[in-house]
Amino acid sequence: MKNCRAKFGVITRAFTVTELLIALLASYAVLICTGGYLKTFQKFTYESYRTAEDRLGIAQLRLYLAGKDIPLEQNGRELRFHTEDHDRYLRLVNGKVCVQDGMMIFLYGIDSLEFSFENDRFWMRYSRNKDMYETWIGFAALHE
Image 1 (cartoon, rainbow, N blue to C red):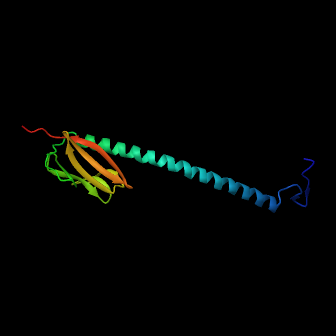
Image 2: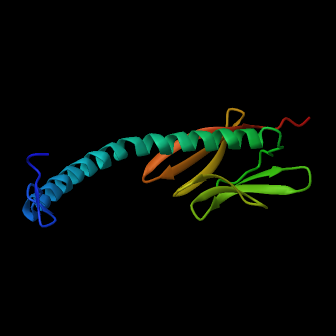
Image 3: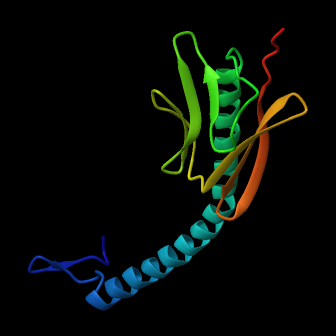
């Protein structure tokens, strides 16, 4: 400890205020650059995260509708199906695709929703942020 001699309780070889301010400014600049890079990477991962959420929600919707009786007469805005006790409706409510009576939410952030029946399947078309998506969600009930 030859170089660090104390005179009256003050170490003579210590950081000065200007050196401390320069170190703080340099670390602040590094943090700003790192934040910019992280925001760029966040934009790339957000879409894949939303896509994964949609796939999971659609798979859950298909499982939910698998044992239900869906009649062929449907309008484009909602899908009516029978459960054990009464009819329920799959429709768009406040940007969410949900089942009513009750509140099971499968997708959110949806701008428009419509249902159709083609090739023995029920199809769901929805839009989000001006992008259109289409997927099948169930099969027709066969009545004899």
